[in-house]
Image (cartoon, rainbow, N blue to C red; front, side, top):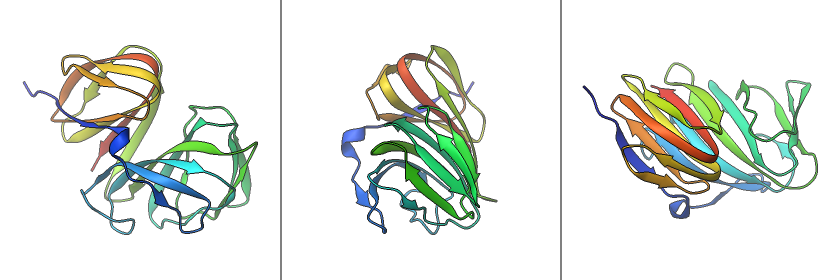
Length: 189
């Protein structure tokens, strides 16, 4: 039987990087391969503070999932079609190839971003607010990010505060106890 390996990724250890367009800052939660830049990641997960609207950077051959976690939300116009993201914790998937523009609905927001490079990785993003088993499929990784409140990871005896994360690898199952909201991201590379 395979056991789950857990790597804790505390929020306080993440460096903030300004966006090229000056509209906000981002903090990488985790990425693969380790140390990869924006041009060569297979997958990348981050939290962003969005201070103002404007165009999104294009990421060719990248699939994106964005989730508003704080603030009144935003309207994303993707290839000419507007999508209102006014409710927190509702993942929205779109192509990084698309011309995308953001309009803030009522002030700054914090969003949770999952990006995967087509042909290199794929992701499934779930948001949970209840106790559940988390399965790590063979050959995959599961990233847990506490978006609100706290979370406890079963046998690993790991506690997560807001924006802390845990990367699970190795296959197997863990019990996730949630007193808040947690993103469960299953990543296959």
